[in-house]
Length: 524
Image (cartoon, rainbow, N blue to C red; front, side, top):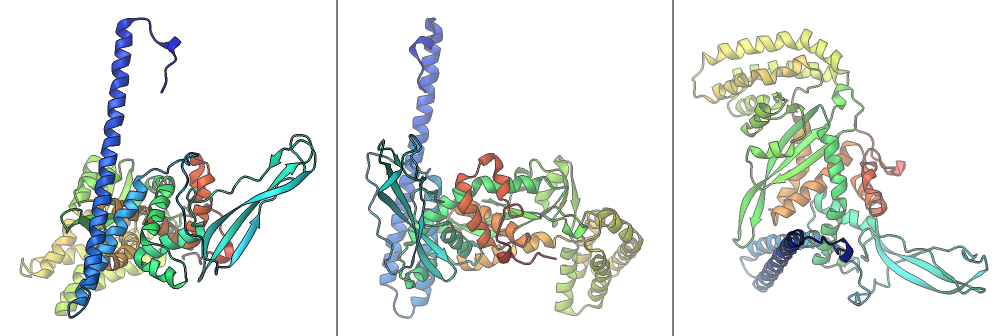
C-alpha cells in the first residue's frame, strides 16, 4: 500500500519505526510467496514423477501380472488426479491480462449440436437516443452437458453502433462458473456428482466423454473440480453454521486411507460427519449433514470441529468425544444400535439364547419408537416415560443378573458390560423427546463415503480429503432435503459467481429455487 508523501511523519524516530514495520511486512510477504512457489514446484515434480511411473507400467502391462499392474496404474491415476485437483484449488484464479495472449485452446467439436443464445442490446442509443445499427458481434462458446449428451451453447452478443454519435453498445458477457473456462454449470455438476456421489474417478469419466467424441484430459477435469470446490467454499461454511446451530447433533467417523507423498505408502485419515435432523421429533427445520476431514483420529478433532456447538451430541462410545462432554456444555446421548449390534453378532455366531433374549428386549424399545416417530418432543417424552421406562429398568436388572452367571471374559459378558457402562447415556433418550434411540442418522450419512472408498482405494492427499468432505456435505444435505444432488449443484454453480457473499445461505438446498418437476420425492 502506497503512503502519500504529505502523510509521512516529521519525527525521525517515528519514520524509522514506520520503515521497519513496512520492511517486516515485505519480508513476510516474500516468505509466503517463496513458500507457495516451493509448494507448487514440489507438486509439479511429484505429478511428473507419477505420470512417468504410469507410462512405465503401461508399457509393462502384459502377461500374467497384468491384472496387478492394472490395479497399480489405477491407484497412481487416482493419486495424480487428486494432486492436480489440489494444485488447482490452491492456486487463486489469475486476473485476465491485456498484455498476454491466452493459450490456444482446441475448438469445441463441430459435430456437437449448437444452441444459440443472442443477447440483444437496446436499439436506441443510451447517450443521444439515436437508432443503433449492427456493426458486428462477439461469439463465445461454452461446453455444456445435458443428460446423456453434450451440446455447445453459443452466446452471441451483437454490437450496435449509433448512426448519429457513433456510440457502440453491447450486452455484457454472461458470467461463467469458471472464469474464461468452457464448462457450463451442468457439466461441472455432472463431473462432481459422478466423482463423489457415483464414485467414478476422473480418468474413467475422461474415457466416457471420449466415447462421445469430446476429448477432456484428466488434468483438465481435475482443474475444474479444484476450481469448483474453491467456488463452493462459502456455501459449505453457511451449511456448517446451520448444522452447528442445532440443539442436537449426530456424530460419527470412518477411516480413509490417504497417500503420503514421497513415501509411496498410505496413512489413515478420518472423515467425520455431523448430522442435524430433527424430523423424527416433528420438527420442520431442514436437515443437513456436514463432513470434516482430519489426518488422524485424535480426540482433539471433534473439539476443533464443534467449537461453537452446545447441546446434545449423539454418538458411539469413541473415547475421543469425552473431551467434548468434559470441557463444553454438551450432553452425551449414546446409541442403542451399537448395543444391539454386539448381541446380534453374537447370536449369529453362536445362536446364544441369552443374546436372543437381549435382542427381544431391545426390539421392544424400538417398537415404541416406530409408533411415535414424527410426534412432538413432549409427546414422545411422555410415551417413553410411561412405556419405555419400565422396559429399560427391567432390561438393566436382567443384564446385571445375567452378568453374574456367565464367564467374565466371554463375548456375552463384553457385550453386557458395554451396555451397562454407558447406561446413563443410553437411557437419556427416555427423558428427552428430542433425542433418538440410536445414531443411525450419522451412519446413513457415511454410507456414500464407504462406497466411494471401495472405488477410490485411497485419497491422494490431505487436501483431497478436505475437498471430498466439502462436496459430500453439499450432496448429502441435498439428499436429506429430497433434492436431486446434480440439479442442485447445477443451480448453485449457475448462480454463485454473481450471488452476494453475504446472502450465500439463500443457495442452501432447502432455500434455493429448483424446477419442481425434477425434485425428488420428499423423504418421509
